[in-house]
Length: 215
Image 1 (tube, rainbow, N blue to C red):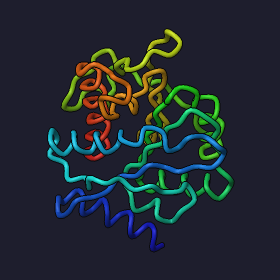
Image 2 (cartoon, one colour):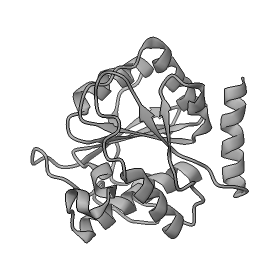
Image 3 (cartoon, rainbow, N blue to C red):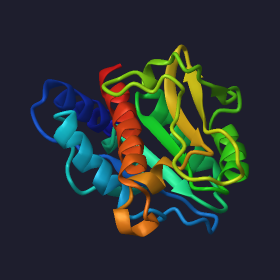
């Protein structure tokens, strides 16, 4: 019960604007590089605090899928290129977190797709990822993306696609595929993306944050 109380107190203080709150990067087992894009969340936080007037703590946390501390963070981000494994306890903990009102953003850093889909099936065996229409509100927050996700990095000459897991009409997980938002949030010298590409990535990231915290 304590972990649920902590989580909802975090949401309450965030909604009231009483204090800053923290978002987190999800650490997972299996050998995949959960630590990829180390500067991405820091830059997204800075962009949101400046342009959305959010009060997100400038330093993000790192949290394991099976930890009770997961419930301290209303928004959790996961990325990487390789293998991911959730054991039964981690899958159940992540499920409880999402059902309690938490939100998971998955960013395909090229190669995560074939690993993350079966692991999320452990978390929600009854759900399937559905492609969100371009009319979905997540694309129309402060920044308007009438054609859905922007293309940040080219992988297989495929269009970027945004998928979601829905629970009782609520979007609980957003998955950017063939887009690579996290790379676009990194420091400019890391991938040498153009200012225009980085801006689009940060704006779409800000839309996700705004959607999560105002829906």
